[in-house]
Length: 129
Image (cartoon, rainbow, N blue to C red; front, side, top):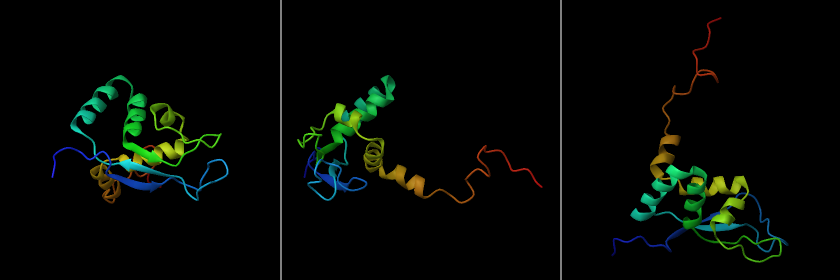
């Protein structure tokens, strides 16, 4: 056993929808996403967030997606880079971000206590009729 993260230990996830590659060579587009981060990566994320939230999130995706089936318009594999993450369709980038969200954050969203939603969109108490 080691105390170092295993960079190849990843979760296989299907991207939303059907394959969008030219000629649809596979039924679904998928990505292998590394779920654990190193101490150094976490520190670097904090530093990057202080400079540019967008650039930090793009970098975070690029270091955690370790393999995928995405092809470019010529049918060639798309290399996993920060630019590739920047160029992803919003739906796919948001999906991958959700996969990478820490489990405790997912629990907080799901376990929202009843009665904590604001009574109306403004958040102000509703007027009595």
